[in-house]
Length: 135
Image (tube, rainbow, N blue to C red):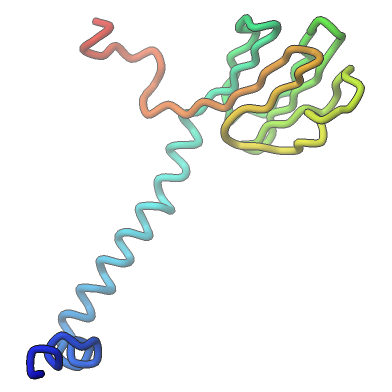
């Protein structure tokens, strides 16, 4: 019975000191600040890859606002990069499902009839850096 009382949450809370509470608060702030400060470097190291008919067409920086006209088998598809997001603005396809997808900032969106694939790729390091494997 005495061991159950020592393990209760009320007992743990009442037995913590001011230093324990300060340490806990500092650790929480550090962990939350890591999430906030890492968002910016990750978004700067991203590229937008546009494939047409299964072949690479464009490789664009994610942070630069751009409007690209992509010539696919069905006609011209327009892709917009703005404020760290990407979307299809125009497409010759009948249902316009790719345009209705709206803005996205990660992953891929496909215009199947026009065979255009837009992918946001995040990189941990600059793509031109040499590592131990590539030499």
